[in-house]
Image (tube, rainbow, N blue to C red; front, top):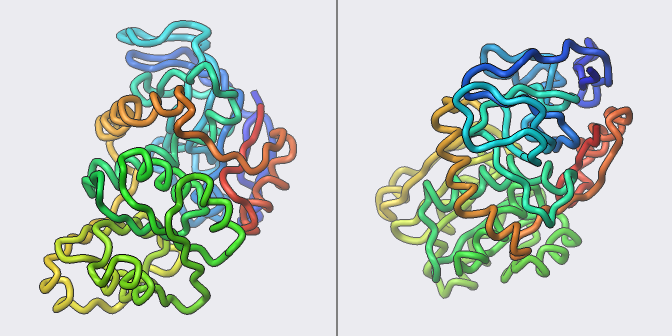
Length: 328
C-alpha cells in the first residue's frame, strides 16, 4: 500500500508518499479500514520533524491522527460495524495511508450527508473540543467561553459546540480575516490579538467586568497572565495547545481568589479505553449535529496524497482556515 512516510530531512514538510507494508487481518475488537481521506494536524508537522513521537507500538515515521474510509475487514468481538460501512475516527498514528488497523470503538459511522474529505476533517478537532469544553469544563447554556485561536481546527469545532449548547462564544485570532469568517459559525465577539497578548480588558468590557466562565486555550504560556485576568470567579481554564510556549509565571493569589480551575488535556496519549469513551461521547453529542447540518466540517484545502509535501507546507504556513485534508 501507499503511506505517508517521514524522511530523514526532519523538516515540517519532510514527508513523502511511499510503499509500506499493508496491515494484516484485524484482531479481536479491531477493524481494517480502507482509508479514503486523512486530516492533517500540527502534531503531524511536529512528528515529521522528530519532535512529537507517537505512543509505543506506532511507527514514528508514519504520521496521521484522523481518517475517513470504508470497513474492509472485521475482527472478532466487533458488533457495531459491517463490511463496506463508511467510518471515521481517531488513531495514535499511521492514519495517512491506504489501509489502517484500528479499534472498532475508536470509530463512528459517517453521516450520509458528508463526503470522505469532510469526515476526515472532523474527528481530532471535534473530539478534542467536545471532551475539553463539555466533558471536562462542563460548559453550559448561558455561560460565556473564550476560545483562543478560534480560526484553527479545534477552535472552529469549539465555536460550533459552544453555539450548539447555548453558550456565548468570544474568539481570539491574530488574523482579522479569520475572525470575520467565524462570525457565520456563531462567533458573538471577535478579538484580534497581536503579538503581545492583550485581551483581558476587552473581555471585561464584554462581560460587564465579570469575566468568562470557560477558557479554551490553544496558545499556552504567553497567554497565561491575561487568561487569569479574564477568568470569572469559579472559572475553568482548559489548556489544549502550546504554540505560545510551555512556560509562564503564574500568580497563585489570583487562582486562589477566583477559585479557578486549571486543567491540561491531550488526546493522543490516552489509553484505548479513555479514547473509546471520548469517541462514545462524540457519537452522542456531535454526530447528530453533523447529520442534521447544525455542525459542519470546515475544510480549507484537499490535496491528493501524492502532493503530501505541498499539503504539509501549506499547513505550516498558518494560512489555512479550517482543515487540510489528504485524499487516498
